[in-house]
Structure formats: structure tokens, C-alpha cells
Length: 264
Image 1 (tube, rainbow, N blue to C red):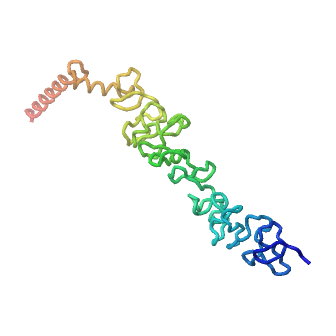
Image 2 (tube, rainbow, N blue to C red):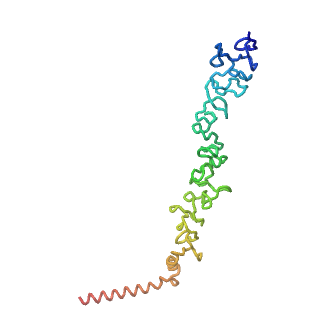
Image 3 (spheres, rainbow, N blue to C red):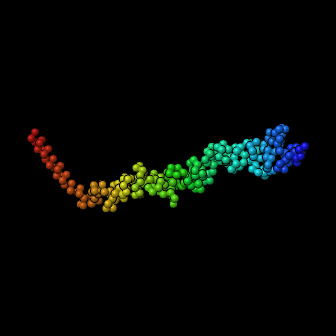
């Protein structure tokens, strides 16, 4: 004779957790829910039914309640018992990256995951969505000029000390190898004509050595300076002396040409 207290699926049978649903008895063919009517959770008095058979109970106020009672699932982090395609513990309904097992949350909604150890992690997970658009030196951080390189901050230095944008407000420049304030992109504005050598020249070339600080580079400054002097003050220019010399040479050439024609 077997004494029990079950009252839900059958009367007077063993009910280990005292919830009213009897313990399953495989030998007698009394199987647990959903295959049968017996308690699917014989040691948990808060749960007894499991409609989809995924191991999470149907009682919404019970232990680990199944949020997708009619659809089997394995999720357990954001909700229990829902489909979890990538198997990371987050349901497809709550997973911002349902096909990536390494990412699931995206606080700022920029498309880069919050898990720093996952695929394509967001380096600035709380940045405003409109600002976190960097994608080259780091992902999801403010990028004022929209060139792909993030703006520098206290933890992420600008080129050349770091890889952040050395020119955060100039879209066509971002790197500055020699740190002189002129960019390495040869076709951009504020380009550096001597990208590997720091310099301050700005007139004939940009960013090249300028020992005397006159704006002209040391390598090309002399010739260009003469042209500038001739244009602004001919009496002080070296090229001023070329004018009479050129006129004299042309006169002499004309005389020689005339004499030659006379001999003919």
C-alpha cells in the first residue's frame, strides 16, 4: 500500500514537494508533464507543469518561470525558457546580437557590443548614439569629424602618442607621425610635406624644418624667398640684378645676329 497526498493529477499518491501534483512513476507508466500528468518538478513545490518540456516551469510566480511556455528554449540570463539561437544564455528576444555568442548587450545602441572580451567590443559603451561612430582606431567612440578615427580622451591619446585622431575637427587628417601639427595624409588640408621630420614651415612647404622661423623650409626657403622679395621689393632682390644682365645679353645677341646677316 502506497500512501500519498497528491490531489491534482491523481489522488493519494506520493508528492515529495507537497504541491499537489504526484511524483512521476515510470514503472507504472505515470510520466511527468508534458509526456504525462505527473509533477515535472517533484522537488520544487512552486512548479509542476512544463508545457514545452524545456525544463522551465509554467507557473509565472514559481521558480525560474518559463517566459515562452509554448516554445522550448534554453535562455536563462534575461528570461527563462525562450529560444537562444547563439547559446549565450540570452534569449533571442533580448539579445542585441542573437547570432553572436560573445555579445548580447549594446547599452548605447551603436551596434557594438558591451562585452569587452567579445567580438567587435564597444570601447565607449555609454557614448551617445549620435557620437559613437568611430570604427578604425577603436569602435563606438565619439568621432567629431566623422573620419572613422575617435576623438582623443584622457585614456586614449592622439597620434603620435596614441592612435586617436590628431585632428578631431578635420575630416581629411587624423595621423601626425612627427607630432608637428601637420597631418600625414598627403592629399588632405594641413598636409605635412615632411611627415617623418618635425617642422614648422608654412609658406613653401608645410611641416618641414625651418631653422630661422621665417615660414620657409630650410631646404627650399632660399630660392622661394628670392622670388617673394622680387615681387614685394625688387631693389632688395637678387633677381633684380638679372634684369640688366638679361637686357645686355639680348642686345649683344641682336648685334651678333645683325652682323652675321650683313656678312651674308
